[in-house]
Image (tube, rainbow over all chains, first blue to last red; front, top):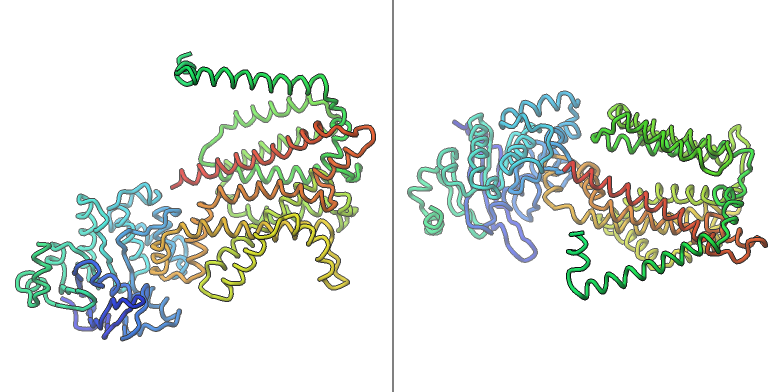
Length: 246
Length: 380
């Protein structure tokens, strides 16, 4: 069970893309070890929201605090937070010119200054954990989508982050590869990782999430345990959305 | 036969086209051969061979040029071997080819000394290639250092000083000068071009505008203008006690010009990198310069290789314009040879010969680039 100590605090976050008001005062607190699933129609601002946590998106109003550090515009501050927060993208974004091993060891060597041997040991452990130890010396282009996404997860874990953000990690995958990626994420949650996951995988949300959050048009509409979210949604907008995807 | 029928004679008008083209080809080939064998006097090439290659470089110091050539070609072969170490070429084949090379050289109508040097260099090239392929992991990290070192070594050997008799730059002529200028310009314009490209895509407005200004001004000027400018105007701007050498001024002009084009080629590569690559690198905590150095540039340069090599080839040929500002590089020396009274008017022979030399170098560059590209795609 997650302890009740907050690790992510977002208060009244606003974001504008030019005139478009993408986030309209979103507040969220995530506790250590908690798994939060964000759902919502496309364009609702859920990806934008989690991307503000590691400053891939700027926000114009509000406050975000990650593990006690308040996010500011200072570059050092941003880099400090990025070391604590791992991110997995919809399009994997592996570095195509580097091998799987080099993809994973890159940041530990250059950012955490681990010696190469140590970093490679760590990478081997992580590859074993995501179940693709034998692919270490291939290039990303030689792997299937599911394998690539698992490498991406291993790459993020190599920085030993306290929080993992997942931005629709299975949306770009062929159906038969979704399961292997979700399995890795499930294990990660079981090991106590704090996770914020943007996804449309209802089963994953039901079985793994501690809390499900529904966003629409830049507002946080509803926040509930998976049980009550999927069976007894409070808001009309949530009911509409669920009726479309279930 | 089948292929012929299918591709060349499948319809009546294709057959007609084939016949006409064949006739045309035959006619052209026959008249060229006829001219080359019966009318042309190739004496002008044979007599002036030395002038074409090294110009007025003091003959007693030729050994220095030979060593420089050996050094450069061995290093080139070594690098080549390292790059393609994955496709192992068997030792037997390497020995075979070097033997063939040596025996061809043996029968060339040159003096013994030259042939011996050439044979030595051929053997050295194949040996270096062999080493590069076998010991790639041990050598690879030292290559860039070796290149830097060899550049200064080559210049020391050619120019002298530090214990060697010095040779003033007005005696560096012919192909030697062309290669030196092209080599230095290529090596210098590459990093400057990369920096300009990065500057042009920078977030800092001052840097961005300065880079755009530079690139657009240079791209709007003809190269010959820049070369004249470098020869005539630079000395006026520099303080009196600093005297830039003619060759140095020429190189400066070439580099200034080429860097602007290089920047545009690299920028093309930079723009092809998906935003997700940069985001992923940032999300891992890499700072801006590491993102550029480790993620963006390696990929961008790969994409830009064909354009960059095209640029190098262009630069190599552009050195011929320097003959117009009075440098005796390959084209310049050809012009001065044509001014010798006994060879007046033998334009065709001389220009064909130097054309062949230019072509040989440019074609090997493009061949090398194609192999390199293939190799890199293979790695993906």
